[in-house]
Image (tube, rainbow, N blue to C red):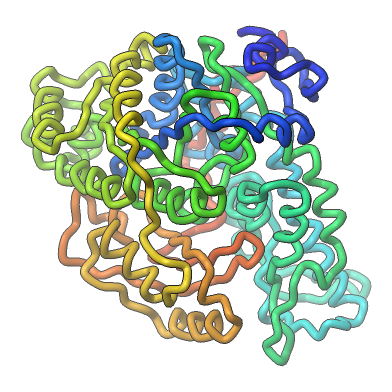
Length: 543
């Protein structure tokens, strides 16, 4: 690794503009960010994917590899990634900083706490939770109906036992008993606000708009009413400065914020993306999961809020994922099967359609694994040719940036076409119309159904004047539909909206489809069992 001061200097950032966290990582001061983002912007390459499988398809590896490949071609790229959550790191997924020769460094630090941003977000969230119950304890002057409180506690850990809790048990001085629960910090509205805020003033305004519940008369109660917004913002002051790191080959990387894409909008902070665009020719931005979640939300939410354009979109695929979506069992998914690959192309084809619907020029990046056969690779290449889509194989995991040079050339060519990304719906459209546009055009659904709870939620949102807000769908990432068992390209299906929830600080309404868990649980054998600390202080097992 290069000293982080050197990485900054190569970007034109002086050491005076850094808050150093040791030798290998730093935050860029907000004064410097404001100055640096006034100039000309580079081009934004969004990295999305076909529908993921339980095995992982290498989207982060490919994003990092693309950045390194662009650097090898003589360009000035920056990679913008989300910060890993400790829940998945210790759970089923493991680390989220790449792998092999395509990583962001210092990898161990990035995966396990980094500069403390997620901790600060959790503290700000829990301060508001404590203020709510303190207000109830001291007489409830605002007249909050405790049954409507929708602000749980949070922690950056997978712990299913905390999904539903009862608080305030004990004596009279221990608070008022009521039902509560925990969500993982990446699902917190504070995380979404953090990643959509433009600066300190916007951050405070958004925090103040958080709706924590309602009075007995149905009037919304906001965080500003509890008078702790200033303290919440103070906790987030340093965290809002973007984090500078580097790839395994010294390419600059900004790693800042980490909302989940199956619940929130699933991309790094707008502050870091705008900074990346200001400092580079090409800013490579990873969006969570596949095009039906990360890419749609980036175009409809993040790009619209941030005034961004997506110049090209990379769709990461793998032979293993195509086999899986072709109906092969988990036990056989690593064995060559050309017929299954052909059947799985329907899923990839739908994601190509989705990117075209959203506007950017699509490129298919096949992340190659060792058990991929030449025949299977040819099948995918021929398919992309018939679709008129640029195609490249990436071997960044094994070869670093050199393994993504061909992919980088295709990405540069796609950007040169000058396409504009376009939202799916106008803000003034009714909530139902927005949801139908997403379900029909992106998921391929026939229609949208609504539960009775969802109908009541829509009526409330309309009565509160929230009809013009953005829509963020929370659904499974494992299917284009709302049913994780529907692999491949489902057809002739409806999606069911179970409930809706206004996150007024973030500025969107969340529509829940299917059974979405906002506090994950650990698997039978969690990744944490493989993480060790040696006697010399070396951490191993974080992948």
